[in-house]
Structure formats: C-alpha cells, structure tokens
Image (cartoon, rainbow, N blue to C red; front, top):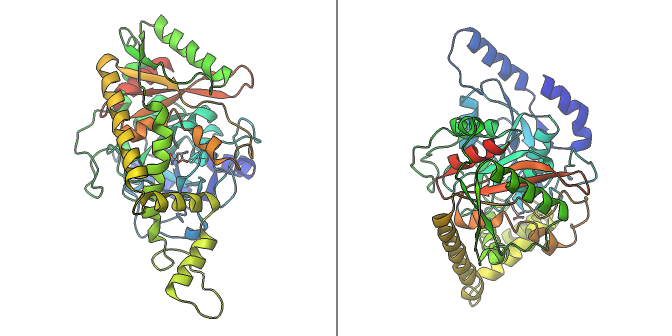
Length: 455
Ligand code: GLN
C-alpha cells in the first residue's frame, strides 16, 4: 500500500508506469495469509516488483512501449514473471520503455517519456527508463529490466540505481518480447547489490522454454553480495581499465567519479591494470547492424493478423495494404528506422558487406575479452559517457543517441555479464554516475562480490 500510495503521489510527474496492477494488495494479503498459516516462503515473499513492459504478463497488458500492441493481453507469463510470482513477489505494474526497447532515453515510448526523478527535465535512461525511475523514485523496491545493448545498466547509471545484465543464457528470455535475440538478457534493477542478487536468484537458472538457456547450476548471487559486503574481497583483485576507451567523449564529472572509484578500490588492495581492447570502439558500429538485422526479423510477426493492432484502409484492401497501414500507424519512427536499416543490411548483395562484417567485429570483441580476462579478474568502465541528458536533447540525432551505448554494448556482443552500481554524483551537475564492472561469461557472482564490496 505504501508503494501504491507513492505511485499515486509521484507517478503523475515521473510516468514510470504504463499500467498499475489493480490486485497487488489482494496478492500481498494472500501471501500474508500463507505466511501466517506457517508456509515457508522465500526471502522476497511479499515484496513488490515493477516489471518492464517488454515482459509478458497474463494479468496486465504487455505493450513493449508500442501502439501496435496497445492493450495486448498475453496468454502466458514470461518465465521470469512466473518465477517471481512463485517466489511470492507482488507485481505492482508494468513500466515504461522505449518502443520495443530501442533507445537510450525512454523518449521513444509510444506512451510518452518517463522523467528522471533526480531532475524531471532529464531522461531516466533507456530503454528501461521506467523500471529505473520507479526504483529511484521509491515507487518500487525492485524491478525487472532487459538489456540488449545497455538498457538495464545505462538507466541504472543515470538514476543512481543498481542494474545487472546477466551472462547471456543465465536468465530465461521466454516471454521477453524479442528485440535482438542473440543480445537480449533479462535482469534486476534495484537500490542495492544485495537486492539485485536476491532477485537474480529468483529469476535465473535453466528454462527448457528458452533454447539458448544455459543448463548451469548457478551459485547464490545474494550470498556473493553478502560475501562482498563482509569486505576484503578486493585485496589482490586485478581490475582492468581499457586504455583505448576514448577519454574525450566522457563528461569530466563521469571520468572524475570513475577515477575516484578506482582509487577507493586500490585503497582496499585492488590492483589496477591497464588492458588493451582495441576492437571495443567498433562495438557501436557492429551493434547497430546486428541489432537492426535481428530486430527486423523479430518484428516481422507484427503483421496485423497474429497480434495487436489492425488498420484497414477505407474502401477495402489487400493483405499487403492492411499490413502496411497497420505498421505505418503502429510503429514509431525509431522502430521504422531500424527495420529499414536491418532489412537493408540483410538484403542480397549487402549481407556480407554489412551483417557479415559486423559479425566478424563481434568475434574480434569476444577475443579482446578473452585476452583481457586472461590478465584481469574484472574490467571496469564508467557505465555511460555522460550523466542524464535533457529530454529532447538527442531525440533528433540518432547517432548521438547510439553513441551513448559505447561502454555497455561490448558486453552484449560478447555475452559477458555486467553490473552498474552508483559511484557518486558528478561535480558539475550533481547528477548520479555509475561504474560498470564486467566479468567473464558465467562469473556473474564475481560482479556481486565486487559490487557489494564497493557499495
Ligand atoms: N540503447 C540501446 C539501443 O537503443 C540499448 C537497447 C537495449 O538494451 N534494449 O539499442
């Protein structure tokens, strides 16, 4: 009830939610009854949870921020939602996002932007700005997001929250409306590293409904966070800092906060090691071919027949005309831009030049990570180049928007896990800054240990 009251009080300004559950209190009361009856419930039973609208739910609409899915009700729950319900978490509502998770500011939502609770004139990051803003504004203690090129970590960075992109395959994508299937991962958005670990423990692990789900048995990430909080895990830890990361694109306060965090780690016994990752700078270019290619294929299912919106032009029309009119009305500009880019990159004659080259760059970035992780335990970067920018500032300049992802994208291209934790406020604008840690594939627990030690 406290969270619902908070939503009533502030969400008119913040607009983190697209839908607020009308039965959250009933679900919470049921959990109370089960607890009173002596049932053993997990550590998160009764805790409210905000859910990014990219994740399908049977009891609330799932739109992925798009008009083409306005009012869409899914016949099944995403695996992460089903697992959250089974653990007694109480879904509070669905959070706003850039349409089909394409964006870094939540301004591309078909339902209007979310505002950053730190400064309502600024963006909360994207695509999962709604989840991050809900957590930052105390409308929800925990949230679920999805991260294809940074959509959990960059919103965490600009809202002073914690965001985790798990190892690819560590968390089920079943019921996560696909953006780019080889890059998408679902993960937690929270206020502390321990909270993220607790939620990751609930949603993670093998799911036979996701063909790319790993069959690993994972350690408890909450235990890893507790371990880190006890201290001394930084002693002897080798932290890689990428020498090619261009200093120029980074806001002064972001760089200063990053250096201060490194100094704090050094003071606790960590060793800062300069590493080379020469192909990172090509990550954005490769990503913005691979992602549109996969997205154009994934979005082909929105054909006016199988899901959501159908627009019939007046006077009768062919199937193609209905499909075209529906997509014209149902998709926003950014989605259309990427579909056009993706279908072009995949077309005969261009495939090798664009998609093929991008896949080769992807392999080179994976090799950069392999070389780096032979020498260091984790890699550290600022989570994003700048603090929250103003609403409207980059909306007409897609390239500027894309460049915001320079630090987050390589992890998705390589499948490695990443965490963003708050590292203080930038001196020049007093806005939150995050530090990102990356670890080798399957070493998510290391991120929780390091993150909690630094928190
Ligand atoms: N900002 C990136 C993009 O626009 C990241 C998206 C994401 O992670 N869903 O593609």
